[in-house]
Image (cartoon, rainbow, N blue to C red):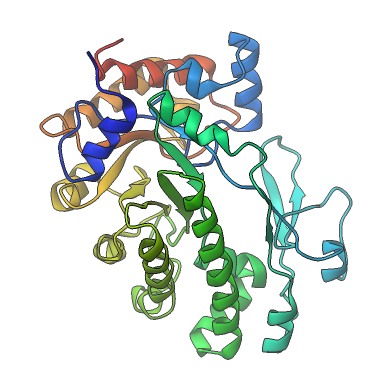
Length: 356
């Protein structure tokens, strides 16, 4: 009899060799299907839950958050038509391509004092309307992943990348205040998510481009790493069994040892456009569960089903000796992704589990 997915994941995260490499079509606690691909899935299958339909190994349960003030539009001098706002009051302006965004409007772009940063309302965390859902997933044998925040990424979203980079370079009090505000909310969100019984807390903090780091490794270690250390340490004090997933795109190899040192349990994506999964697996695969990812930038949208199967099989062969990885797409499946490629990836993922 095959092990339950929750037990199989526990073996992996405790440093052992699981019976199979767990797989998901999602990106941690975020859906892996863009809106057009999600709609295509529903049209093709008549189903509404792609994790259940493809018998993936994880389930998702995340708390909702909302803007903590009265009117996020009031934070911006000009708001283009069609702009939506997130929990921080950051404006998101849709592009002409469904499932994508054209630009963001940072609410602290023109802030000049620490007081203005501190006055920005922090997001409010809403109670879970169905707290029994996590228990239901556990009873069915599935581990649960939940969204649990950011540090660097949210910080520059609030300030704007150029302004925040200047703040960091200058070592200004503005940068410290923004990072502190974001860290405080991420800590609250992570603790609230852990209290739900969520198994893996998922953090998102892109630090790289496809050519290198967005900020110097020294700056990341000085400004970002300590914040992550405080967040994870605070959660561990109350929830010693908590596990942590980090999504960080790009060529981040200069800080991989730091991510391992912080104690993240799963790292996504090991982006195939700029990192060598096999080499990184040889170096770090015994210390952290790496995500073996099929390219959402090249193979999935533009390759054939056979290309998808070959890339997936190469990843499976790389970890065949101990299966210490999580199989996933490298990012959200883009609108161009053909249905046949999605199916080919899911079937290839399931094949190494022994059920075709």
